[in-house]
Image 1 (cartoon, rainbow, N blue to C red):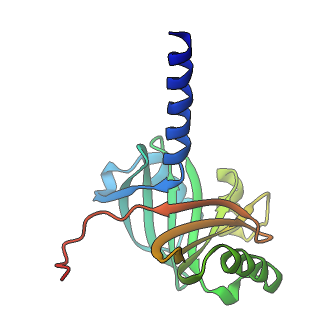
Image 2 (image 1 turned 45 degrees about the horizontal axis):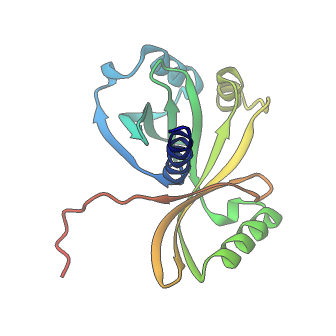
Amino acid sequence: MKHIIILLLLFSIFITALSAQIKSEREYRIKRSEAPEDAREWLNDAFETFKRVKWYKEIENDLESVEAKFKYKGSKFSVKFDTNGKVVDVEYIITSDDIPEETRKVISGYLESNFNKHRILKIQLQMLGSPDDLEDYFDDDEEGNITRNYEIEFHGITDEKNELWEGLFDENGNLILLRQIEQGPTFNLDF
């Protein structure tokens, strides 16, 4: 009986680790009034001149968060908050030219050595830090203690399978996390 319990425990750990490498995300639009008040206040303080915020409830691998999406200084931004309204991260879309050359080389090297072919779909600069440091960065151009990562969504071909992936790389181009993106059903007819 003891061996069965140990095997079940090991199996559940294996399944948990395996599922952590799959990104399953659903989001749906919510009203501004449904977003936490602390999130709305932080956003107004950090981005005083943003336009038309769209609020979303996001469920990623059973974890809930709230996300604000908007344009600011010509870029598309998303700010993720926990359900209490505390900022988790700020992301905005960039191009590969916005990544320092040495970092870009490290990321390209990883993709080329781990995938037969790849095609980058989207790159976002992810900024992490305390709510105060992040607010000061966007509101007052103060650097503070902010971590920058690159979140790259791409199609990667391995063993003749073309799958959608998300790679998170640190500011030096080192891989932090790689997850296959689970694609939900589409409403397109496939023939």
